[in-house]
Amino acid sequence: MIYLILAVASSAAISIAMRASEKHVKNEIAMFMSNYLVCMALSFGFMENKAQFISTAGSSGLTILLGGLSGVMFLANFLFYKYNMKHNGVVMSATFMKLGVLVPTIMAVAVFGEMPRATQIIGILVAIGAIVLINFEKDALSEGKHMLFLILLLLLSGFTDSMANVFDKMADPAQKDTYLLATFGTAFLITVVLVCTKKIKVGKMDFLFGALIGIPNYFSSRFLILSLQEIEAVLVYPTYSVATMITIAVAGVLIFHEKISTKKMCALGLILLALVLLNV
Image (cartoon, rainbow, N blue to C red; front, top):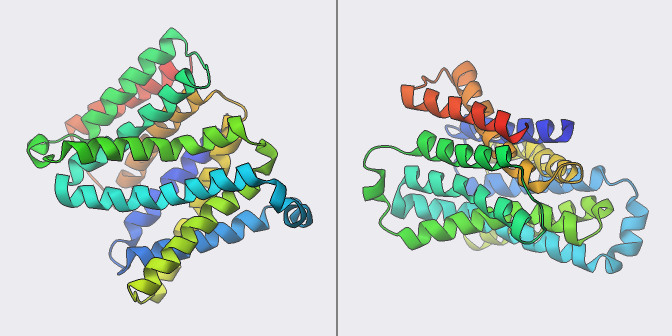
């Protein structure tokens, strides 16, 4: 359970760092390039046997393939989210992206044969209700004109999150560092191409906040994989999602002095209930 708690803390730290970067970062792609560069360096730095990695890279084909696919999906998910915000509004886009937690949860049951208990099923349903409640606002439906794009965002977000469990079940978990290096290395190369082709200038603040985001970004992925080795995915993913949401909400009040509406208080109450039910 300690790895899941650390994954939640790291994931929340990403959102906090991104929130802090809003007034300072001019080019998000440049920031993400810096972020992935730091993630790559950490992936290699935490690798237990670097010499073995170099000598066995050719025999780690499945791990590298899954990592490369994960890296592509990481960045595609971000870009598609930005596209949806433009066409469907922030509220609907955020709601459907967070509802992507349904995909790895359903996949854990349908593909990998994990079976949640009755209380956990109720907890998952409560968590879904909380996600909708905390993100949904009046007139949001009128903004969501391109429903197909929203559904695709849900699926892309969900399958991106699912990659850690796919790696854990299909590849050698001992090669997690190779998987993470391939994931962040692929995303880094794509962002480099985007920066070069679009001739984006990388400012100091873009690089600084990218590096700041990269540290928790790496550890959230690492700890998520480690938690999947100890706990069933059907429990890990919904807990990871809703616990991150409540951590971010608390940080918003304490750090950014945000006010929580009655609706959000009710949603946070549901999240706490969901956490209890998921872990009973």
